Length: 53
Image (cartoon, rainbow, N blue to C red; front, top):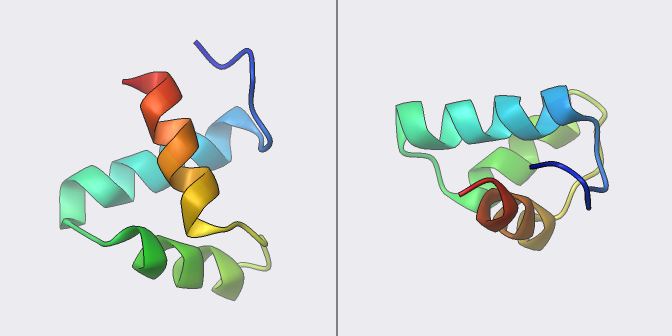
């Protein structure tokens, strides 16, 4: 499921959990990850979300 990924599995799952639970936008997730010193683009989250779905 996570064979082609740019981030650790836990980061991807955390983003997905927040995205689905709190109805956040991908840009909101990008800002939240930046607050945690994880540099991720909203397009990367979108791509990784598509890999999991």
